[in-house]
Image (tube, rainbow, N blue to C red; front, side, top):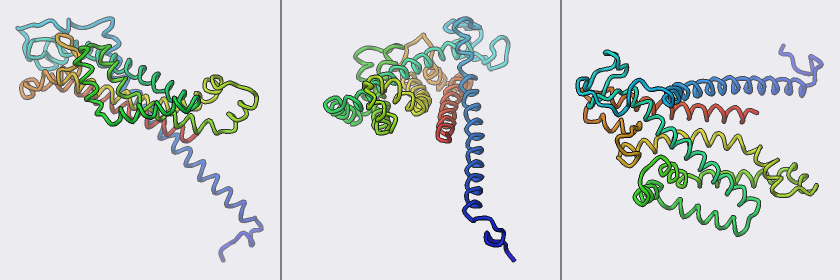
Length: 299
């Protein structure tokens, strides 16, 4: 005979509560384990690419722009050129490290600009509303109606390509994502009890935003930052590939991929090294962002 709560003398609700707690704890443990693995993998992938770039600020194997016509298209592993040379005899490893400085500098500056501008405007629109909120919404809708690449091309044509220019135009093209997300999150947080209590105690909007709302929207902000970082790397590489990024002789990952396209058979390593660097860091940023999202969702 199958035992029931009446036969065992235990209340059925107690059994259900225990089982529910066990299932919740098991799911939480699995999510914690999965998110930890993703965070570690994503961090290691990003570190794998960024570590040589950081070293390049202090040391490079060769001058990245120095040509050596006696060593044209040397394959990887031959002689003193670890990753080979390109069609002009320039060391691929040195150009990869130096090019990473350009690509990562643009990405970091653009993310900082986008993050700061979008977060400040989003929070201000949520808490000092009406005309500011209406103006921000209208401006965001106008910008979203225009292709981002069109805005970037117009600015680059007017100002000219450089690291600061690329960071500026990319940052101005992506701030809407942050602003709209921060605005919606700030409105939701503004309806919480702790904000109501802070207002009842006489706290100003500035104090509420800086001490209460902003810390609670930071997880969303960090996840957005990791995703945006990868997309900015791709965008900068695409512009450099098309010749709209930092100009020659300065290397960048997108420019290196473009330089190697005519030698894809005889010098495949010219494009492969920067393409792998772009793919690894973008994938690493995506995995890291997904792991952080799972971690904070769990909590």
